Image 1: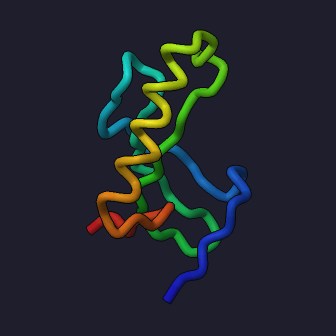
Image 2: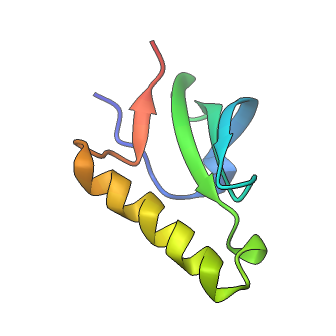
Image 3: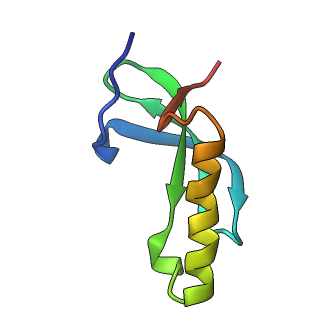
Length: 77
């Protein structure tokens, strides 16, 4: 089993799989460089979240994490 770290320099974005919240969050297909494993990675652009209403949107993103068995990095099959 591969242990993934949080250093973004260890991930290479291959393509964007989807976006949500008007482009404020996206799921990318990335390669974990140390092992070559392909994984899905969700990124939230906090720079685009400036208004209080947008904070509600972000809280919805994090609430959705609690609705599933959330792992920060998923192996791409």
